[in-house]
Length: 293
Length: 339
Image 1 (tube, one colour):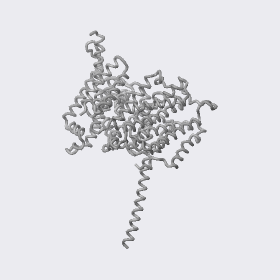
Image 2 (tube, rainbow over the protein chains, first blue to last red):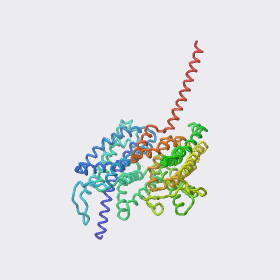
Image 3 (tube, rainbow over the protein chains, first blue to last red):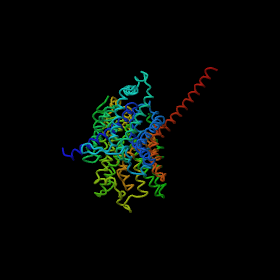
Image 4 (cartoon, one colour):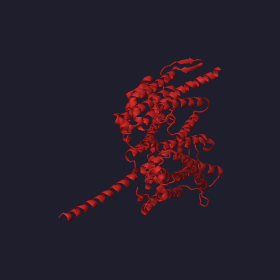
């Protein structure tokens, strides 16, 4: 293999890994919430963008260390999600066919946030760059990669692993999966269903936030990333099977690599088209998704 | 649902016609208000079409704006490139767009509720991307400007502008609303409602669900495309952003806010919601935020919309009055029985 091909291959692999793990994180956040509450969070792209923009503000305006800024944003994410849960999400817990109601409500949220962003951030800048958490460049063979991106990759893989272990082995994860499977039976076995709902909404939101923070730390972004991310996360959830975290991981990685490979040869829009195509196909052929539980 | 609610009374039709046809005259001295009225009337037509799909068949087609865009681009291309008359181009492209709408609505035969809504969102996104990337046809993100108003052969300016244009739009909008009310009162309308309530049950009752959905998508898309064609020639400018998912959502909001499945509800919704951004021009940027908050508030506070709420209160009052009469009668009977 010539050096040039090797370079392209390595760069594709790395951006595939980073994109894939971020996609998988966001999709896992969406799918946890959908699986438990039946809430398809159409505003996930806006949450993702909100986290990135807040971290950008904190690190560029206040000059905070980006790592500290990210932690502050995550800490703010908790009351944010809790507030949304009390004021909005809670009201529909017992509504029949609540997934349509939630979809509409979160589309409304999307509109509110996109309006707010275009009034505020849209006027301040059009590309947002969070300063790197750590400096320096590492050479892997002939391929130079920023240490910062390696750190981002490591953190996102760690977060994914932690999420997986939490859902698999922790009592909360077991309760969550019980509610996934059968709300009434779980309630009969003493699971606090509403508590689980609240926890999963907050957890899902935080996972989406961390996806936004990691993406913002690795790449520069603009306001349109929210729509692309929202569509991608939904496509991953539908193809992987709503409620399946494993599906989110596998398909998220797959889509990340698709995007990286396609972007090497053509524009990212083609990748978006291919996700939409994949989602339509799965919706029409097997609406329960590939990793249906 | 009582059938009486579906048909408009003669008085309601008279009031509606007076309001819709009278509005252009009322504001004819003020070009700005005239423009607001024209745009509102186009949205009245759109919300009538959305009502057919969302209110009566219970499907939430988020690609509604995309189909309106197909109709608009078709009409604009036919009139500007091929020199067709607007009055020929509009029906031709509307019929084409309606056929496309039927094809795009086919997933609704398999998917229900959230899954169909999501699917329609995907379709809408693809349509928006198509509008952006097939630039030789749509001029891409720049949009098409200086679209001429509809032509008029035998009248002096040869172009439909100002008050006459508003009147034509008013007539089309009124016709649109009345056609929906006719459909709603017809056996087909009853079948559509049955499909909305439970399509499996409707099928077991011998209702051809596929036919119902195809009819609904054809008519709804026709409304979308006719509205889109008028919109393009009325504003003189269209771009892919004119027909993005936000327009679908806003039209949906008008139907839900006014009252889905009622004839007057969507009209009320459009009349209240469309002028807001125009009248608050200094805060035009807040439009998305206001509409988004309204969507959320409607979902929480008024799931049946303004007109649905009025109907409910009216029914409640009627029931209460009936109750009072019954109580009084019972009391009177009691007095007679036990003196």
